[in-house]
Amino acid sequence: MPAEKRYKTKYPGVYYVMGTAVATGKPEKIYYIRYRKDGKPIDEKAGRQYQDDMTPARAAQHRAKRIDGKEPTNKEKREALEAKKKAQEGKWTINRLWTEYKFNNPNLKSLSIDENRFANYIKSDLGKKEPKNLVPLDIDRIRIKLSKTKKSGTVKNILELIRRIINFGTKKNLCLGVSFKIEMPRANNQKTEDLSPEQLKVLLEAIENNDHPQAGPMMKMALFSGMRRGELFKLEWDDIDFDRGFIYIRDPKGGLDQKIPLNEAARNLLETHPRTKSSFVFPGRGGKQRTDIHHAVNEIRDDAGLPKDFRALHGLRHVYASMLASSGQVDLYTLQKLLTHKSPMMTQRYAHLRDEALRKASELAGSIIEEAAKTKQDDNETKTQNRPQPEVV
Image (tube, rainbow, N blue to C red; front, side, top):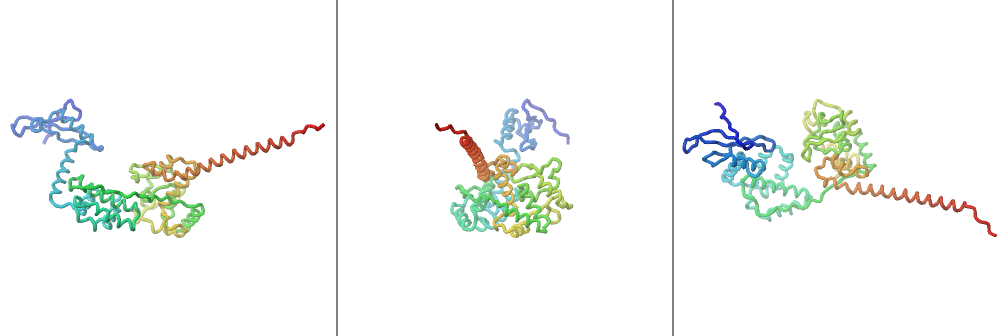
């Protein structure tokens, strides 16, 4: 079937094709709009000339609103209508919403973690309830129960998951939301590990004495580069630019791809690290992307006599940052870029180390000036003592 002829209008992105009016059987213009949303081209019907009282100007207005996000696309309208039908088919409990949420977010990075949180802390208490039937006491009970054994950050993550599931349901018109605000506890569990020079020396010795092919090199790489555990797991040989001296970090925690300098210590480690058939630098079983290594790195941590709560990989990222901050030679903006922090507030935890280094440098400057002044005074006293005294008559 040949394509219908398109007729341009004076409005950008608005055109029409000739159709037939349903009511009269006479020729009728059918207006369409073309635009891009989230980088994707969209070509959709705006309305009929007579049936919908559509004009090129009105079509252009609809196009502008959809570009600005003030009006849903035709696809979004269909999805909303479908969701509304589903909502009328049966009760949307928290359990059912969670299943739908997972189906709609298969590539969510934290999905496996959220699975555990839901199964362990949400399902038994809230799973069979609809959001509209929840009362503040339901959330308070979970908060109080979790607070007895979990840190405030963990409690916040679990409550945030409950809120996310409910918001998903209301946004998709699957259910009514709660009639109150789910309050989040303030998380105050920022942890910044650091090691003394003696501890660091013992740890490096423990790494050298360990025969695991990946654990020791990964710990060194975290220490040399400040890379996150997940970034080390995903690191591929193609991500390392030995010629230009950069490491490309794909899909990091902050969202956008980043690149960090390849320093000499990291370069030497990677150049001597054995390559396998896998594309990953630190591959897991079968050459696939590694998902865990905590047993091996914790064994090295224990051999070095470090505290049990020292996180063997993430802790070394903090050691990397702490060393740079305490040197007094690296400003916080540079440190933020090296750590690929999305916000400067995340780097602020190291500010006191940099301030202490600057304070020591300032004290040193003061001591040097005082010493110089003292030397000058001593020279003047010596000259005075050596000056010839007048004769007494």
